[in-house]
Image (cartoon, rainbow, N blue to C red; front, top):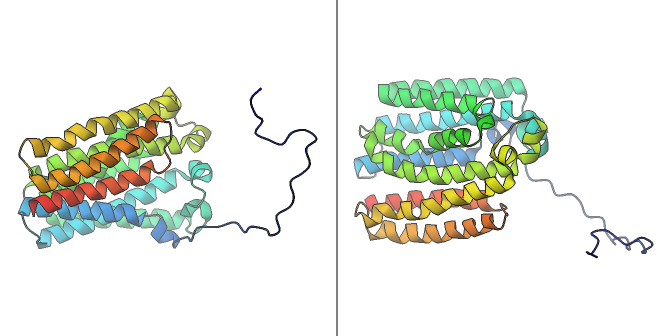
Length: 299
C-alpha cells in the first residue's frame, strides 16, 4: 500500500510549534510602477539600445535612438498595463499580488496609464520616422489584443507575443537606419521568448481554466506544454551557434553563447522532468546573457 500523505487515523496530533510563524508578504512596489513590470521594460530598452549599437557598430546614442528608447519603454508599459487590465480574474488565482488584484492601483488609473504610455510611445516613434512608427503601431496592436484574443489561440498567441518581445532589437536598428542588423539577434531572442511564453502558460493553468481560456497546456494537456517549451529550447541551441559557425560572429560570441546553451540544456532537462519552477527566471537571465554576447562581439 502506498504511504499516505496525511496522518494515520488515530495517530496523536502533532505538538504545537513553540512559536507562530508570521506569513511573509513580498514588498510591493507602488501600483503604477509594478503594473508596467519594470524588469521587462529594462530588457526592452536594453534590446533597443543594442539593436542600435549593432547597426552603428559603436556605442553611440544619436537623437533618433534616444526617441526609440523612450518609445520602447512607453509601449512596453502600455502593453503590460493592458495585459493586467484584461487578466484581473485569472490573476486572482495565478498572481494575487498583481497591482489590480491587490488594490494598489484602480482600473481607471491603470487604463489612464496604459493610454498615456501608448500615446507617448507612438508619438516618440513618429518623431523617429515612418518605419519605426509602423513597427510601433503593429507591436502595440498585438500587445493590446494578446490577452483578450490571441492568448486563447494557443501557440499562435505565444508566437505573436514572442515576436513582439524580440522586436526591440530590430526597433533600435531601424531607428538608426539599418533594421536588417537587428534581424538575426531578434530571431535568436524569439526562441527564448517563445519558450518563456509557453512556460508562463504552464504556470497560469489554474487561472486560465477558471476564465475558460484554452491555452496550449489546457487545450492539449500540460505534457504538450512541457514538450513544446523543451523542443523550442532544443532547437535554439544549434541555431544559436550558426552565427559563430558561419563566421558572422567571432570567438567572443561563441564563448558566451556556449555558456548560455549549457544553461538552456539544463532548463530542457528540468522541463523534461515536468518541472517549470525557476525556468522563466532562467530564460530571462539567458536573454540578458545573449544580449551581452552580441554586444561584446560586435562593439
